[in-house]
Image (tube, rainbow, N blue to C red; front, top):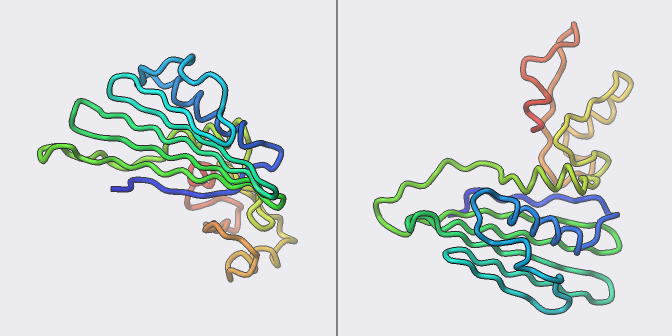
Length: 190
């Protein structure tokens, strides 16, 4: 069952190799993995590489053609012989944009296993912090709120009515007359 799935633009200054390197660092930096930093060597170009340690496996692939570059990491980890976690990270870079897709699924391997509550994978936070989000229409992708000024009512109207050119959902939080909010925009953005 897919527990989490997202796709968003990241900063165009990053290469596909930057994303794959960060994904490898995310895997080897986890306290839950047995895969060592030395398992990957050089990143693949127009091929794929595999690494397996005990109940964990990683496949990394990349390809480049005229006009676009694509790369991906598939990380599979079996936890206590009951749950199989699969994380797929795919990035596509074209001359116009750089998109990142992250999917996390957890499958029960036995009938008595209980599936955990879905949470945002840590790698999403790492990508936003270390590589930076791209632009979704005129709004930057980030884990921080994007505040509008009082003179930007036209921007708010376009965002609310869905004509701002955004692909991602927008959560619009109005301010009270005193500038306070009913919900915390910073917590909501995280």
